[in-house]
Image (cartoon, rainbow, N blue to C red):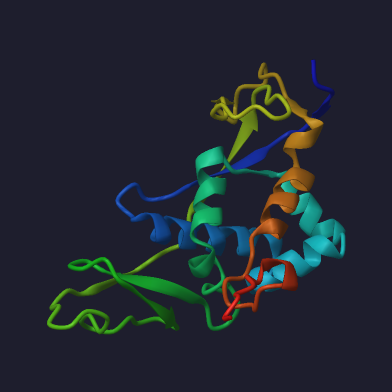
Length: 194
């Protein structure tokens, strides 16, 4: 049995089911940045790497399920486009073609500008909802869904695996690559033009 520690509350993030995958990733990132008090993804990963205690504490109180972690990994370009600082940067999705634009400030464009002859309108992606719950047992490395109990239920078992906290989430978030950075030498392919 995995070692456990007591955690009183965990924030579970929920995203609108109607959002496409890249919209859901943007919603998750906006909430993660707000909870970790970071303006951009780059700032968040720098704080994690530096061992910022406040960020570690914030991440220890957040539970992302495996599907949410995969969303962040699969849509790293979108993850790096949003920001929670002032002005907040998010994405707006076209209701017709599904393309997105980055929006800073309050109002997205009135009609689609990404697809030729598309007359769709944009809707801005809002942050994911963070709900505080009392965790049931979460085993270290368990890929199953989080089992939660209502916040008022004091009889709940408040154990959480040591590896299921901020360190594991921080390690995962730090590993997401910035798609706009140039690749390292080990990632470059060699071509023989002879």
